[in-house]
Length: 280
Image 1 (cartoon, helix red, strand yellow):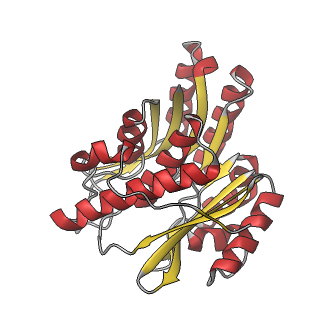
Image 2: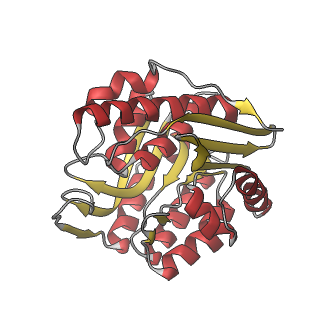
């Protein structure tokens, strides 16, 4: 199985494609990365270099992949950080090409737009494109709590509000909505999935790790487990447990980048598994 992954990348560290590619490969999924931004490292470091990719050039890469005749073997499209609204059109073009070749292919949209600490860190036109065009076209959407609020125009300050917002987002198109980074009290954090079969949550202790990229890693793992046949509850439990293991290792080592290389074996077999609890 193969995934076309359109998102950011860094030379040092693990965010965007630099997280998704090794994670999906560890699960036995081939990845065709197209970068929307190429940086030396993520921008929370003291310094960084690099620039957004040219949307036309990214579109040419997608066209080149299509010209190889391999899109019939593409099982999913994964999109993440765009950098510019014009890159959203590249994602939609890629989606059209993939689904023309394989109507059963999934589209997983990770709407990377912001977080509670920073607020919205993309331009308003990017957020609007994701809200109006990409999320409704997706089969799976994986926002954090802040991004779910942006997508639905709601305040996500409690698990029951996240559930209601996920229902509202599903009504706009995507069959599966996952919300991460929900405060669960007592030093815990939860993730929620809502799909046709019901709603489930997975809760873990909060890990004090300053590294970026956990959301990108989660989205790739959730998609990978889904492609390998896991239901939404199992995919959530497996993805959350793996990200928790990576964060524990990251906190042990320290630094501003995910300890992904040191944790590769834990992606497929986390040392601690957190179960999914049914909400309805």
